[in-house]
Structure formats: structure tokens, C-alpha cells
Image (cartoon, rainbow, N blue to C red; front, side):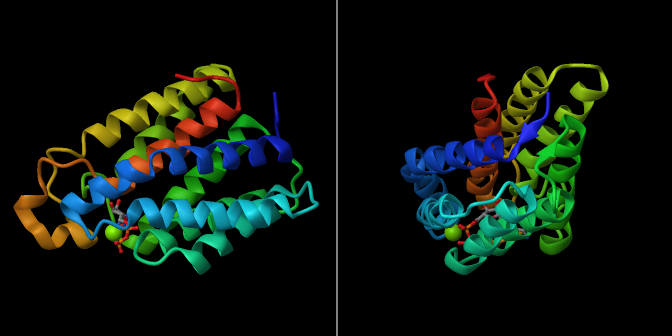
Length: 212
Ligand SMILES: Nc1ncnc2c1ncn2[C@@H]1O[C@H](COP(=O)(O)OP(=O)(O)O)[C@@H](O)[C@H]1O
Ligand SMILES: [Mg+2]
């Protein structure tokens, strides 16, 4: 099975819908350990991204992902805009000029996106950020594919691992971003960026036909 440009657009649509549906939850989470704007940021950013993506007439997956990156950078303030912008920009360079991706190429693109986020934000696993959902999700995806799982099963395991990573941020003390200003008081709350990252990876499982 290969992932076509229309599947990428379906993924982005599903992500935008999930971020819209969970807007209030993301606001609440960010209110507890940040400034309460993460839900509005992500909803606004993905709406702007989808407006531009739906207006494209292309099968170049790189162009689609670059369009998302630019929209997020232009419309999302705060830390998450540039970080997710980097994520999609790095994915875009992996997919430049390609009208379809093999599952392995899809995983490699996600991994490049994650590396971009980690370089830009200087966050490691365990710092209570979006990395804590992205990294285990993408690792599980790669491992499942390496074990011979089909794409649907690999995406399902990716979403499960990302959800576990998201929940595992609850006891952590934040070491990056606004939540780190709270020090020990950031413990006991789920990280908003890890939550949006889980929603984005879960949307991939949904859009490609494998809801966990
Ligand atoms: N340096 C960083 N590296 C990775 N992720 C980060 C970093 N700083 C913040 N984040 C993520 O961004 C989320 C907050 O996003 P958002 O509320 O939109 O931006 P801001 O913190 O500027 O208000 C956090 O929950 C965290 O997951
Ligand atoms: Mg915020």
C-alpha cells in the first residue's frame, strides 16, 4: 500500500477536525500550565492551513506539507506555531516532488519532522512537550513496519504509543516552554502540546482506515 497525495490531504483534514473538536480541552490544559491559548492557536492554524491546502491543485505531497508549514508559521503565535511549522517543513522536504509515499517513506518523513522539532526546540523526551507524544508514536510506527505489520496496524500502534506518551507527561516537570516557568508546579497536568501531537498522529490512523 502506498500513501497518495489525497490520503495526506485526508489526514490533514482529520487532524484539523480533531483539533477543532478538542479546542476547549487544549485550552483547559494550557490554562493549567501555560497561558490558555493552545486550543485556539491550533484550531486557527489548521483552519488556515486547510483553506490553503484545499485551494491547491497538486499531487506533490511536498508542496501540500510545505503549504501547511507556512500557514502554521504565519497564523499560530507562541511556541507551537514555529515548532509544528518546522515539523511539517521537514516532512515536506522528505516528500518533495513525490505523489506517493511508501509506509517506510511516510515514517521517515515523520521522523525528520520530529528531529526538526527537537533541534529547533532543544527538547528531549521527558521534558513534557509535544516530543513526548511524537517520539514514542513515531518509534512504534517504525518498529511495527520493521516487524512486517501492514500500514493500518502500524498506524494503530503509532496512535496507541502516542496516547501513552501523552498520558505519561502528567507526572513530569516541564523543562521547556512556558510550563517550565512553573517548575515543580507543572507536575500533575497533561501537556497541551503532547495532546495536540497525539491528536495529529491519531488522525493519521483514522484517515488511513485504522481507528485504534
Ligand atoms: N522548546 C519546546 N520544544 C518542544 N515543544 C515545546 C517547546 N516549548 C513549548 N512546546 C510545546 O508547545 C506547547 C504550548 O504551545 P502554545 O500554548 O501554543 O504556545 P505558548 O507556550 O507560546 O503559549 C507546550 O505544551 C509544549 O508541548
Ligand atoms: Mg500557550
